[in-house]
Amino acid sequence: MSNIRNVDLTALRTRLGRVGVWLGALESLPARAARDAAGQIEAMGYPTLWIAENRKEAFAQASILLSASEHLTVATGIANVWAREPDTAVSGANTLGEAFPDRFVLGLGIGHAKFVERYDKPLATMRTYLDRMHESADAGGSPVNPVPWLVAALRPKMLELAAARTQGSHPYFVPVEHTAFAREALGPAPVLAPEVAVVLDPDPSTARATARAYMKMYLDLPNYTGNLLTFGFTEDDLSDGGSDRLVDAIVPWGDVETIRSRVHEHLDAGADHVCIQPLTGGPGVGLRELQKLAPALLG
Figure 1 (cartoon, rainbow, N blue to C red):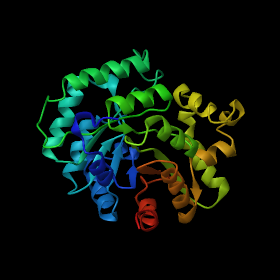
Figure 2: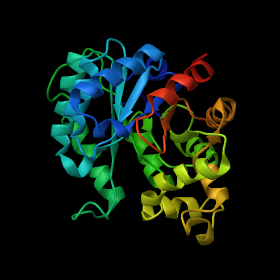
Figure 3: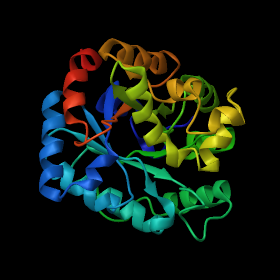
Figure 4: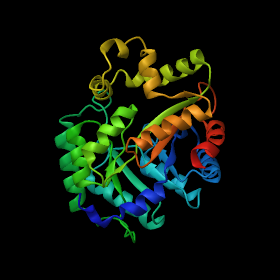
């Protein structure tokens, strides 16, 4: 892959680090608490914080978190392409890139038909969107180094598009087998940064219950279920909250070493960066779990 927009991929891998945090739960917090959480995550040693775009607008949320930290990289996982025009996405990303040099990564995704009334032709839409982004690449602020773009890609054609037009991919809700598949589809150069939800609980019953509560929404979305069916899972695996086999493949649970081992399986399969999403099964956004995991994952 050519180095699209002259982004230094080696530097990007270094900035992301091998393990980061995916914390969509931050959207449930008021701004002051979210800022405090970002500071705590940075103090734990995690180099990158990924945020969602559901309850809060992604660029505004990223600005809040970047301003609350000194070195933390903030990445969107994902900014929905239906939420803004391509030139707006570029200008917003460049504005953050200029204000917080080398600390913002723009993760883009097509979303889901269930939540987007005008959802249509995801691959063609993403291709056109990226083409228009490239046409507007200098809009907004003027960062010294270009802001990296990643695409939330699962299947071959979207992965190929991510490799051709961006710096890589940020898959979500995938087993280790998909990470190996995505690396082959992307080729060696693009960055691959899968999300992995984790449950720090050694009890099979309660851990799987926590995982199933998280998985419920995703098992009702064809983008994810269709992808899982191509990796040896069956309709039976997808029903009734997910089979134990599926739950265990998507959401590693257990003690610190068990979770560390699964993260390294993704890294060994070709991931450059794994962003863990702690599931608590109760109150809190996962900061306690992240603190317990940090020595093993970041050492």
